[in-house]
Length: 309
Ligand SMILES: [Zn+2]
Image 1 (cartoon, rainbow, N blue to C red):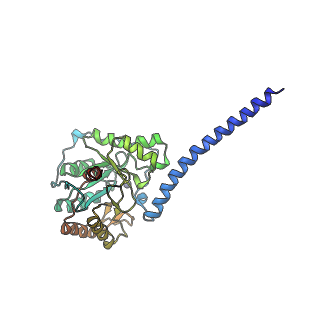
Image 2: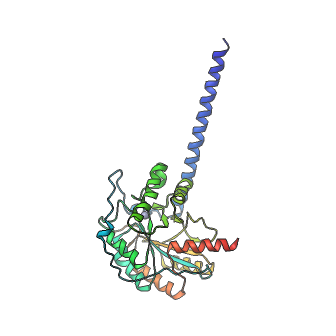
Image 3: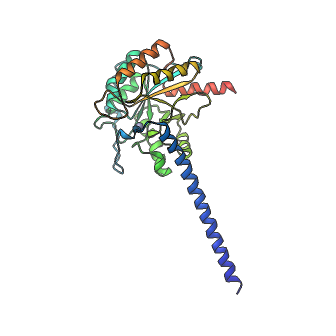
């Protein structure tokens, strides 16, 4: 009569152990995700780029264009600065999501100043739609010397989907752009949502670095897969931008300025006036801070890191 209670106890014990293991795994994912999201809620504006567009999901992914059907028609030629170190600081102009107002208003201003920028593209749910650039525009930007970066396939919040779905979004967007002939090295997390698991997917996908939506400056101690930024949005003031640029120069750091829509009539939080960009461009010229693409900026941080060791 001894053995039934024994195996019963063993059974209860193993159920307990299993439950504890499941709880530990859930707790790990919950806290690593929750911590990131809370940090972003505290640090970023109340209406983050989330408000730009809600991509209905699931829905069929947009097909990619036939690159042979596109002939790039560059309007200007720009190139990234290649500073040898951070002694004069560094600045980048980033545009997320591929809004046509950025293409029509912001890029000509930067091109006239000779500044290359980095454009983060959503590959399967935005380009070619109303308010967004066409693939022709994206090819033109690359032909002008701007960097094209990946921003997932559908702009999903990466921490809310399975790791497999996240990989499909991250690696998939890189492969989409590479299949069109673009050289892709950097990534931006949609709305800045990331955690350790998402970061490692980005790293394993072969990117050299990625940008988040937390302020402010980057330096050789920065996590290359969680690069910070200074936003330029509806409620951003000129003193905020000027302070960030001044600090980058004085502290030998890298400031990444991030924009979305420019001069649009929409009341979207991520719409910024071109007057603010014009003021920024003038100040960048005046100070002489090197303007780099994110691709080059990451290389400079890396060489500064290895020089330190
Ligand atoms: Zn975005």
